[in-house]
Image (cartoon, rainbow, N blue to C red; front, side):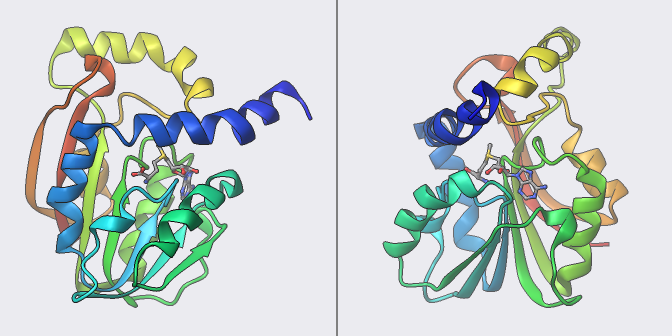
Amino acid sequence: MGLGIWYEQRILPHLIHYACGTGSIMKQRALLIPEAEGLVLEVGLGTGHNLPFYRPDRVKRIHAVDPALAMHALAEKQARQISIPVEMVPLAMERIDADSAQFDTVVCTFTLCSIADVEAALQEMRRVLRPEGHLLFCEHGLAPTESVQRWQRRLNPVWKPLAGGCHLDRDIPGLLKRAGFRIEDMHSGYVRGPRPMTWVYRGRAVPG
Ligand SMILES: C[S@@+](CC[C@H](N)C(=O)[O-])C[C@H]1O[C@@H](n2cnc3c(N)ncnc32)[C@H](O)[C@@H]1O
């Protein structure tokens, strides 16, 4: 096993589990995920940090896609702790094999930063979401101040290979709008941690 593969399979899942599980990030999840309802598609399940926040009285089933098999073992542990059925599919969102307009809610948290073809993935999210459904998002991205943006651009080339392809400076509201979503509600601000990594957009969007 090469060093890169060893890092991605053995180390990265634990680093992501830790970084995505800090108190201030879990608070964002607690504010967002209980809004999910019906048949849910979770994009980039990761190690399953959102799973405890879904309400069993509102959510029928969770279909979760994530191409990184190394994450699935940790996510399975979380899935076993909840009463909602979770189906884990080892596919990239861009390659999802799902009918159009079938999900009531699409959930995407801290994932748009890492998707290689983020535009194509967002188009697919819009396609599989029912016209009256919701996209719930919580993503870090482009900070509002020029000085932090400069650091985000400087750090990107070093950060990306270490953090599973994560881009620090993606314009999340711009990407959503260009993919045909209308943002109904959005909160943004810094959570705890270094500023280039912690400007967070949390909200709800609908197919426009
Ligand atoms: C930083 S982790 C976040 C995990 C989880 N969403 C959370 O909130 O803790 C990013 C996740 O996106 C997944 N990912 C990367 N590219 C993807 C793609 N094309 N489609 C779906 N998931 C993808 C990664 O494998 C990783 O599990």
